[in-house]
Amino acid sequence: MSTTIPYADRAERLTGSIIDSSTSLLAAQTHDIVRFAMGSPADEAVPLAEFREIAAGQLGYPSFAYGATEGEPQLLDALVDFLSDTPEATTHDRITITAGGMQGLDLSCKIFVDPGDLVIVESPTYTNGSATAASYGAELLEAPIDDDGLIVEALPDLVEQAGRTPKAIYVIPNFQNPSGTTLSAARRELLLELAHRWNAVIIDDDPYGMLRFSGDDLPGFQELSPNDPLLFSVRTFSKIVAPGLRVGWVDTDPAIRQLVINAKQAMDTCTNVPAQQLVAEFIRRGGFSEHLQTIRSTYLERKMAMTESIRHHLGDRVRITDPDGGFFLWLTLQGPDAATSTSALFESALADGVAFIPGPALSPSGRFDDSLRLCFASSTPQRIDEGIRRLTVALDRALTNRALTNGARA
Ligand SMILES: Cc1ncc(COP(=O)(O)O)c(C=O)c1O
Image: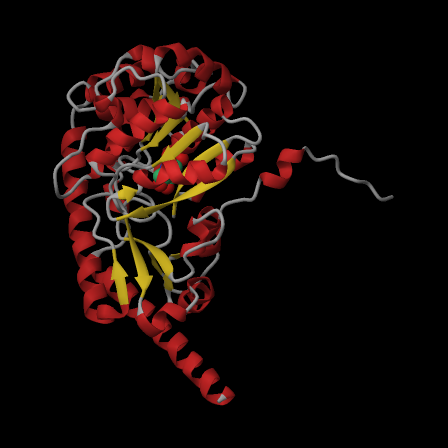
């Protein structure tokens, strides 16, 4: 019997994530690998002892019943209270707890993106985010970035060439994934101005903003434009507490919040209750600021270690970004190495015991085959040096193989 499976049109747009599939790929490897691929926090940054204590003492039956869609009251209270001392101060009528940042992105696209809508994304970008917009039928407009983040001044021309205005602008303003760059204050202001000119929503995805380890904080979109209904802010505990909890939040105009809750009800009814209670109690105990302080200095040390190691092993064969926070730096091959395909390099580097994300996996149209993303957060300085040494071995081999192939052709 031959059966045609009656897929929705949307099924074609569910392309999967190379970033996420690297988790399964790496889990299946049995040899020693230095893992620069996933954007995971340091193992020791996860407050395991506190979680064990909280779970033993506080998780009872109600923790395992359905919870409220908008989030557990104790987490909403703890979060609003914690944020009140930060530039992201907010109110209960703006916050909805989500299953991590990804669900926040899905909610934003579900609410704002119709098939055929133009959505501006950074190039390179976090392609799980751009893929979410694409899954709702968005047409993606990839806009270039430089050391100050998205080149906002370039957007009017790009939009004119596209022949229509965007419905949404997806931006990662701080220590961007994958480049590590931060959107300058002037560009934040200009982006707000353009969003209002075009009546486009800014999907402000900022998982790393609390992880600044050098330089000065820049004003966030909510600070620059308070109570702006065009701002949809996506946040997560994944990078600052633990990613496996799957707990995040969105901060939206109160007029939108009921729609967010309705949309979430059609997805998963409520977010994992025990996970929310772990986070709520962890924050309520008051050690969260110190925890952030500690992990910031860990990540600064690791970024320095990676930068030094790259300078030592690779020198001017590569150009790297210099993030002031977050998890990632972006490496672009220079000179003769620039002809090495990082997609092709991935497999041989894996065999050599080092994993990274090749550039094309971070662009919806597969650009940046001369670049790659490195996560410095998850490995100790010693392991970082070993990983960069292995990457150098893989790059050397690619160069030698190309020279041999070219020699044989000549
Ligand atoms: C920019 C960006 N947005 C969203 C996410 C997803 O966060 P979560 O794991 O909480 O879903 C990530 C995770 O890597 C990210 O880097």
